[in-house]
Image (tube, rainbow, N blue to C red; front, side, top):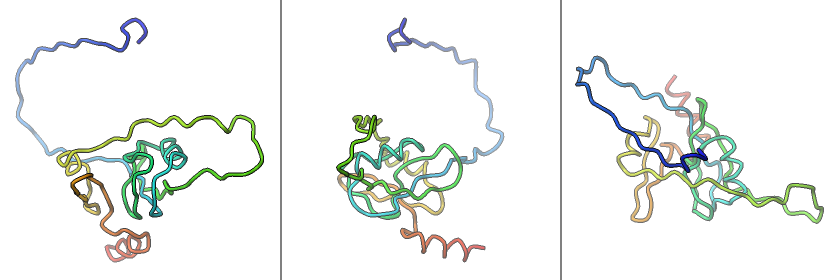
Length: 149
């Protein structure tokens, strides 16, 4: 990395095409779902980024049931991305570091359509494209899952 300074050149030669034998099945890991409505805060996003990739930026409005990130393991996780750092008068050693966040992943409409599962929807507004669960509250999601069984 230090020798190339992050630059790389790649070349390839196509040898031909083969017919498609079987369908590609989607294998996606779990997602992180917002458990509360409000504005996304840096502290909450930092906690979420320790568990996966996030789709939201600080101060972005969030609603309950919105998909805010992708997990590296299967299964959905409810997370409070609107959580702020608890302010106290006590100082703690090493905990006042500046929070450095990775940029949020933003999907186009086509990428979002490819990403979603059967129990998810896409909210498209003039300013944003958001992913969400079909049932926004946890209680509704549990009821729908029980009905399925």
